Image (cartoon, rainbow, N blue to C red; front, side, top):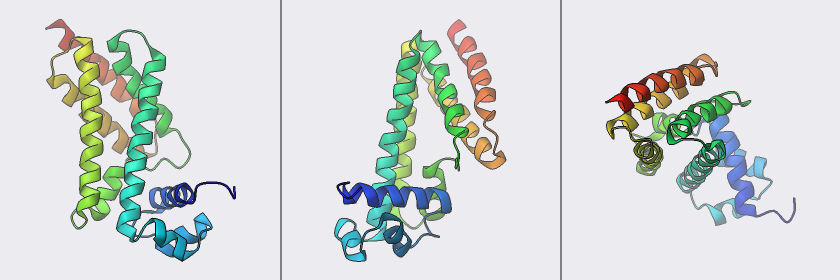
Amino acid sequence: MEHEDPRARILDAAEELFYGQGIQAVGMDAVRTASGMTMRRLYQHFPSKTDLVEAYLLRRDGRWRASLAVHVSRVGGSPRDQLLAVFDWLGLWFAEPGFRGCAFVNSFGELGATTPVVAAAARHHKEEFGAYLAALTEAAGAPPATAAHLALLAEGAITTAAVHGDPTAAADAKEAARLLLDAALVR
C-alpha cells in the first residue's frame, strides 16, 4: 500500500465517498481521512474540491465505459447480440453491492446547475455512451434513431434500478430493447 500512487488513493477514496454518500455531503477532510493522506498532500494533487470532483467523474467515466466495452466484446456474436449484451452488463452493475444509480446523474442533480465542470462531465458521459450505442446500432443495421431509443431504455433502467433497488430493471429493458431492435431491423 505504501508504494501505491497517492493520486489514485485519493481518487479511490473520493469515488467511494462521493458515490456512496453524495458529493455535497463529503468534505475534503473525509477524503483526506479515507485516503490516508495529509491535507497538504491532498491539495497538492487537487487544489480544490471541484478539481477532485472533476477528476473523479472523468476517471469513473473511463472505467465505466471500458468495463461495458470489455463485457460486450467478450460476448461476441452478432452486432444485435452485442447491443443486447449492454443490458446484461447493466444487470450485473445493478446487482453490485453499493449500487446507487448513475454517478453522473447523481452529481448533475447535486451540482450541475452551479458547477459547470460537473455538468460538462455528465454531458460528456451521456454523449459517449450514446455514441457507443450508435456504433453498435449502425453495425446491427438498425436505423440511427434506434440508438437514442436504446439509450433511453438504458437510462430508464439505471434510474429504476437505483430507485427501487431492483436489478431486474435491466432484464425488462433488455426485453424492450429486443422488441425495438426486431421492429427496427424489419423495416
